[in-house]
Image 1: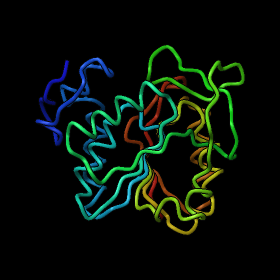
Image 2 (image 1 turned 180 degrees about the vertical axis):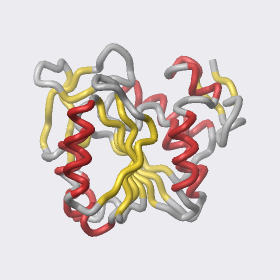
Image 3 (image 1 turned 180 degrees about the horizontal axis):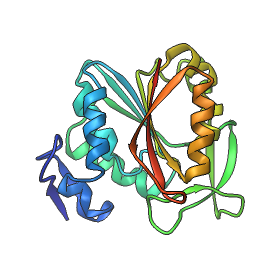
Length: 220
């Protein structure tokens, strides 16, 4: 079933109800993060959506950057890619490019597990799937993605590896970073790494010791 999104900046956009949680088509998914994202992402920006899932933030970024900007959505899971591309097509989006790959700290092939639901896929040594992995530095240094103004990242535990594979890009471009950190130790790892590159932090969503954190990192 396809319905219009009911509220928020994406109100009226067409959405496949079964592609994810109901918060997507209701328009209330991660409401606080959405507000920060809309505050920080400007017309003409280049946004990289790492772990794009079925495209909610890719669609939101597309709307915010306008035709003068560009969005690059990276996602490895085939069922998510089908929904992501469908959402872009049914909403006549032309400023989003989709790359079918996972992002990590090496360019190789690696095992991947789909997880309990389509939003929880991750690189895993005993995964049944094999996916292509790439580093953001490789994409950037080889001209496959332009210099980003913002990176949105939700990679189910691979956060530190993605950052390590983007050191050159981060040092040169200093993009705004929205990062979902899965657990307190991962949050600390990511903050320590980014602090060494001159970033400061706002915690958009505070997690408990075992919960997820949403970190907004900006160059200071």
